[in-house]
Length: 115
Length: 115
Image (cartoon, rainbow over the protein chains, first blue to last red):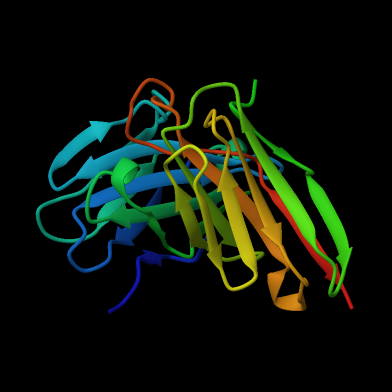
């Protein structure tokens, strides 16, 4: 049973370009969470999605960031017009139910570097 | 201010020694999760505590949630090189930036085991 798969593992972008990060949850998991980990900071919640629905995006920056989890295919975190401050590790996690009743399974992360 | 405070921020321990990491919240914890992260990798779930006074053990790692449910400790007995990494506590504290669906994490404790 494959774990949470994230790709790419490493991504380099120049300022102003777009970054797309993909996350395939574990088989049977319909709840996906995106987190961002900045150097010297903790893991910050960004968004929680279920299939075709954004449930909680309270941690997402208001501009340039968007997330989706379509009926078919992986969840995608999209960052438009990247800036240097977007450089971070982005982690996806999935669970078979809402997190407050069970554990989260994390992917290996996607490390974005903005030049 | 940080909602979950972990202490110490870093810890260097000689192999074979015991150690304790603490996680303190200013709010009541409805669920407390301990994760381990190896440098450059994703998070591995260790344990989840939900009831005040609860204690769980896995191999040489024991975690407790205090009666008032505002503090947890992670104790490692007879530490080994394989214990090295970053230990993160995550909690469901009723909200995460406005929503109730994302775990809030501490900044982590960096553990180094000296041979």
